[in-house]
Image (cartoon, rainbow, N blue to C red; front, side, top):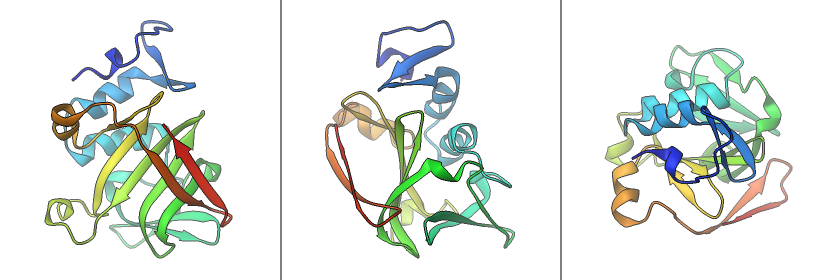
Length: 171
């Protein structure tokens, strides 16, 4: 699947508009070229870098007060290099079922499933990483599943903002 064909508005040879913001197509294509979490985590490292380390070594994501805290495989902890990129969550702060990040107006949802055997290969139990487009969401991990059903998944998502208020996304 070539992500750059989803929106035909070309800005230049290396960038396309997805939603209302500019997204580096090379990074998205890298994440979409392989259906494994490590490639999707390379996308996270590029767009939502950690203060220290890589999303590839993340063991768990929790919310501490209004900050996203990431525990690493080596026992250390870190946060996002740009903390304001964390905007909302679903579930309990100590074991969120989803984390919502935002960069230049585009949302990315990390969903977790600690009980599913398919996610047991991932240290952080990430079930999916989805990128918000204009009126659709694209899975960066389950590309085959979305390709067979519908690449463009319309949905309304409700989250809890990091300040405790409602945070709703419509697509």
